[in-house]
Structures are given as structure tokens and as C-alpha cells.
Image (cartoon, rainbow, N blue to C red; front, side, top):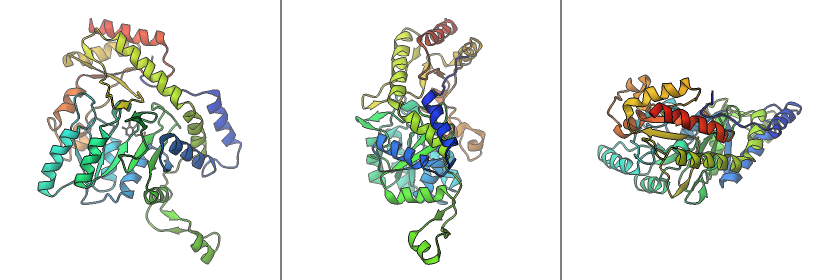
Length: 380
Ligand SMILES: *Cc1c(COP(=O)(O)O)cnc(C)c1O
């Protein structure tokens, strides 16, 4: 089976993890701050807080921005459930904004319309979570302009997008967002096994997220001077969301190949575009303002009615296709909150046509040719 995504592990990656195993610290040692610094430098952000998943990073980002009961968070329905669940962890209301039919990202026009209505109703969101679907940036300057006007904060879910660029700057530099979140799950661009990170240029947000990551405990030099060197204080209720040194060492080693990973993905995406040009499907739209990190290569069948048969035939042929994403509002746990089919028609129409083809740095041209041949046959 050719999977839809796969990690790339080198002998250097293995050596980096082994070195941690032979060191004094398996967690809370020097590797985590080193990895944080490396990601912050790579993305042009001032601060980075490593955690055990992007899901945890989203949760901490929302808490640091003060999201709580009585507030609301808006995101796109075309995402993994974690982008929305973070609102609910904080006791906030969740709502969605439909996608743009070309970029498949949260639509700034739909956002503007919904904000105008929400303002009249006195129910503006506190936080908006744009998701850079498949690795291509959202229209962040438009979303940021709306944030200025309506006063909401922005958490970019860039789980797909480390190594991507927007307006010729790295995603994660915080030009248009308060906090940027990355995922290091094995199917993503860079992996730590499980892991995530939150980037920000605001030292108070960084400090708050770092404290919440470790039980809400502060180690304050003045308090230690007063009470003794063992002294620490839990100043708020936090979590154990820490990343281990094993994970951070793997991440730091992986990060050195980030450009190579993204280049390899882009080359394969370009090749898919050429090989699929004559088939009855739509290949990914490319925003001239951004350079995608190419986490996913998603095609849309012209005939939605054939999606299931084509998908099953590809799986039977050993092609590990997938579908990204079932619109979050259609999940049973979201329908229970009152959402239903028809609420976000662009995301729903996209979903019924979508198939994610295999894309990862180690995919060979021969394997990619097999994917294309199987798709061609399934569509014949
Ligand atoms: C993978 C993913 C997440 C969750 O990442 P974890 O590191 O597995 O918690 C969140 N949002 C999006 C868009 C993702 O693709």
C-alpha cells in the first residue's frame, strides 16, 4: 500500500534520538529549548512553546488569549476536529465560517458577512482560527484587517504549513496572527512522533502558554530567594502538555531538512498537476500570494456521485487515498450542538468530491505514476 502521507526518518534523526537516550534528560532537558529556538528562528517568530501535540497548542493558545465561557471562537469546517474542539475545552461557543471554493480555506468574504451580522446581534467572536488547508496560507491580510475592525484575536492553525510562505515571508512570523500553531504528527511536514508548537511575538502570551503547559507552575527567582531553592508555586490550573527531549531532538534534526521536504513535496505536486491535467477533476488552486508547504494534494472529482467508487477502487489497487475533511459541523458531536447539513454549503460540496492522493518526500516517481495510472483507470 502506498500511504497518503509518510514520515522521512534519516540516520541523523535516529542518532539525535539515541544521543538523548544516552544523556541525563529524557524530558525537560536542553533539547526542548533548542528545538523551540530553531523553529522560532526558522519562522521569524520571537517566542516558541513546544508541547505534546498541536491539539494541546491550540488549547493553550485559546487559554492564553482569555477564551472562556460566554466567548465564542470561529473556525473553518474544512479542518481536523482539533481546530474546533479547542473552543469547547475552554467552555466557549464554537461556530464556523464557510470556505472559499478555490483556496478551500476560510473565506474572508464569508467572514466579513458573518461578522457584520454578529456585530448587530452583539455576538462577535473573541478568537478566529484560520487553518492553512493542505499547507497553503489563508488570505491572512484580509482576515487581519477584519480582526482590526472587529477586535478579535487570531490563532493560525498552521498544522499543515510549516515551511510554507505567505507574501514572501515564512508562515509563523506573526505578522497577521497573535499565535501560530504547528503539528509534528508523522503525516505532517516535520515530525516528532507526537508534538506541536505555539509561536508568538508577544512575551506575555508565550510565558502564559509555557506556564499552562506545565501545571500552571511558576518558578520565580524572587520567590525562591524568599522561600528556598526548592520552592515553586502553582499560580493557576495548568496541564502536563510537555514535549520530551526525545521528541525535541528528533524535531530539531528533522527541521534541518525542512526546505528539502517542502521542495520534494512541491516537485511531486507539480508533477501531479501535469499528469492529471486531462482528467475530469480539479487539481489544487494555487494562490499567487503564497507558497504552499504541500502537506496534502487534494483532487476534486467533477462527478461527486463517483467519489466513493473511485476511492474504493484506488484503495483496492493499493493506493492509500484519504479524504480531508469531513466538515466538522457534520460530526455527531457537533450536530448535537445544533449544526446540520446545509449550514456551510461550500465546504459540504467540496467534501463530497474530495480525494487526497499520496504525497510525501519519499514518494518515488514510479510510485506516483502508479497512483496516476490507478486513478486514470478508476475514472475511465
Ligand atoms: C493534525 C492537525 C491537528 C492536530 O494535530 P496533533 O498534533 O495531532 O494534535 C490540528 N489541526 C489540523 C488542521 C491538523 O491537520
